[in-house]
Length: 176
Image 1 (spheres, rainbow, N blue to C red):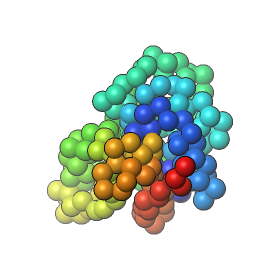
Image 2 (cartoon, one colour):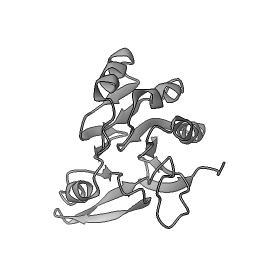
Image 3 (cartoon, rainbow, N blue to C red):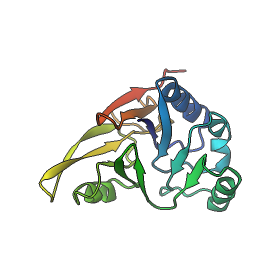
């Protein structure tokens, strides 16, 4: 199962749609949003693409009531989990949060196959050793809006993940 992992869209609907469309074209079946979505309107165009979207909030909360109302109106398409989410997709246990320190801590538990976080606007994907003598994937898709992304000239990034072979590729949106 392929997934689209995004974060830090900060009300940039077009960037979010472009990333989800690209992921869907490559076979993604779900979207994980790691926070700082901000407003419900940011999702309107993305929801029309038909992929289930799982989102957590970040440190820029936006209109939480509107996000919950949108979830009620789009059952099975949009799920707003609050501060963190625990999911099982493609036979994998996944934890989603916004904050990097919390993501790192949960990756170290050995309870998850994949932990996703955002906040730093810096994309990375790598294995984290955990206390059960194994490894967990720890990924940050960066900022799909390209805001304040250090070291990559503020280019919007997202991750295409494949849960069947546990591979995670950082993707960049085209400029312009």
